Amino acid sequence: MANYLNWLMQNTLPGQVLLQSWLSRNGIDRTLSYRYVQNGWLKRISQGVYCRVGREPDWVDAVSCLQMQWERPVRIAGLTSLALQGYSHYIEQGKPQIWLALPAYTKLPGWFSAFESSATFVRLYTSGLSVDVMSFTTELKIGDRLLTGSISELAAYEIASSVPAQISFEHADALFQGLNLLSPRKLQVLLCASSSVKTNRVMLYLAQRNGHPYFQYLDRSRIETGAGKRQIIPGGWLEPDYQITVPRAFKSKGVEDEST
Image 1 (cartoon, helix red, strand yellow):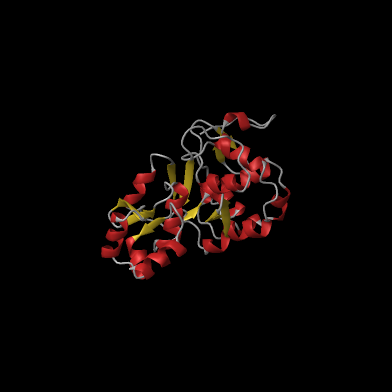
Image 2 (tube, helix red, strand yellow):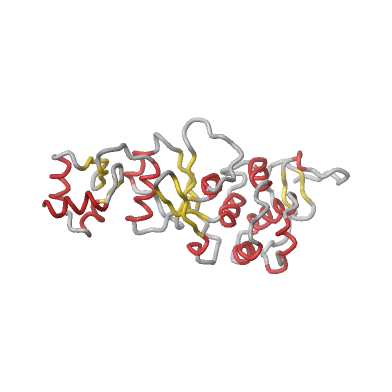
């Protein structure tokens, strides 16, 4: 027991969330876990889920547990990833909003609800990409802890895919104003691998609208943009180049008004 306890103290941090399945793989079975709880070294969060005592776990610990111990890929995405990379334009009030990208049809485990009182989790399912998204991830530092998140190009794509369900067109546009240094090579790969006509059109529109230099280097003939009109904003202005409805405040001067 002493050897396993020493291992636990040396290989985990106070507040770290620990799954019993992960503990078992490292020699700490349920009986030992129970003893560690009884002796005050571990705290039970839910059935088969613990944390090391010494600090109350937060959403970072919960997400870190998913990334390190769960058997499904999860990453920090969209708005949260951009904010952690310094692109946020808004100061959040109240509970932080944490965007998580999950594989299609994947639900967060039941124990994760223990952290929903301190953060609002936005779940994304970017199944329209036929590319290995793990090659478009980076390490995000939060204090002395690291999480895996979308690089800025993938996060921008996730923002475009979430308009207007998770983020307003106006907020997305404000974010894109600061995204002038995205890599056209990485964007080209992502957009060519995207089967979402709506997302591709919104992404291209926002890049062009904000006059970003990388836009001119994108080969739009290789990007699926479909045909016909797409309603993004009900009652909005029909933007003529991409045939999507956008907020009427975005209407260009001198352009004939049209809506769907």
